[in-house]
Image (cartoon, rainbow, N blue to C red; front, side, top):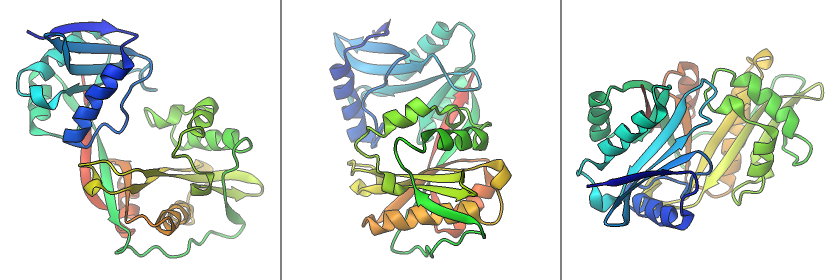
Length: 291
């Protein structure tokens, strides 16, 4: 029987090894550790075979958010269901969201039988760089594009982000400290972080990211990402979003990448239309279930 235990301070190396085994089989998760929150460890004879992370601070809508994983060698044994039941008991009736990556039929069945409803779809779109047509970006009169300057632009970017994503459960809560922390990540490159300015004021941005090759993920090849595109609501229109997107796409192409991905909400029809015209097609879907 699975031995389940909650902790706030897990053995990080043990979890890292566990998540690497999951990633080798599934291509995900990209990260091999979760900071903060609470951790649910599931063991068989002392071996970690199931794991869930609960973000107790949650999203900006007041939901606690969980992700769960079962070791590839121990699946189809009811461990996923045991994790879900333990999560539900632990939150004691508070709003809970659980991510299911890839929309696997087993996850659909588990969610339905445990009282969860499909609440959100996050689409992963993919573009083949060689086949794409990404012309020089054109901005309206008075708008210029430049790259991000660390130590100077964080507050202006975060202000635009908060206005652009006031509806978004995660992105809208981005802080200056979080941006500065990300600047220390190995993948961060200010040359791939584009800002749009008008009358000396930042009105939009496109933050790109480059993912190293991961076996089983995107063909085992590196991938560029349209990480975040944000436009101040007062500055929307006139093709600003397209211009910023093109600036980032051309940067990623010039870095020699053969593919670019992006994440977009499944109900964001305007964005989906723009990305379709830029050569992106549906690749995967992540689903968030609510209870």
